View (cartoon, helix red, strand yellow):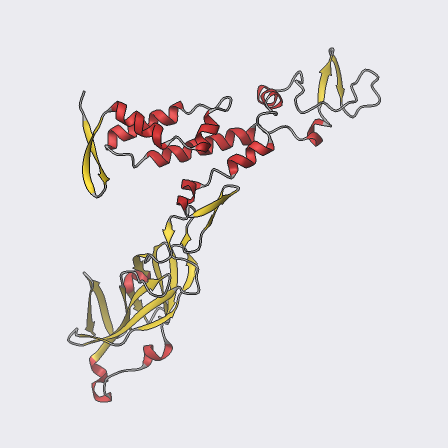
Length: 324
């Protein structure tokens, strides 16, 4: 048997662990040994085996336990689905249930048929003619009850809220300073900037270029959501002159996009003398975003120009403009 290895850090030192099938089984069982998974595994008709086996196979293939949480989350969803599906049939449905008693058709509300049963069947009654699923629900209502469902919902939040929030009916209520569906993101961590709208080229012949959309990840709705803007000018020799940093309030569109407005005065004002104004072919901003107003993402560049007179491109982060 081939023996693979993965590395774990123990007290700051790298330790090599033999990673064979037995090790994978042991590690998967250890990570899946949680109160919720134990509760689900002990319920009727819920089998953890396939999820444990998938965990072991992925561990052997990847030489790590990085996929374990995926299988844990899948098993939690399966457990919740089974318990939700097998909740007792509501009494208002049972009150109108049509069924057979000693071969005679009747229903629970009938008064015209003297042989019809007029009492409402209990939630645990086995009713002839019901489907297998309904029959199963009726027989298991003492186990799959509302209390169990609430208990499981209160424990099935994604990634257990990363230990940084409280789980309430399946939804993480994050502690202050954390966000995302599993509370895994730190508000003080800079967002990840992936780009700006229009690939950073804004033509005044097409739009007014009064703002830009910043595309990224883990933006947070906060009063401290801030755009950092550094205005610049590009001359006919493609020299770029930068000016002082400005900050404006960011407007959250989604956790993947933020709008940053450009200061009106900065779009018009020139920092050079009137006789040299014709040397300026484009203006623009470097743009970065922060969730807390302190820690900013990497920046990107927005070039503002008029295509009637100027052609601009961005190449490897550099701005190149040519006057027509």
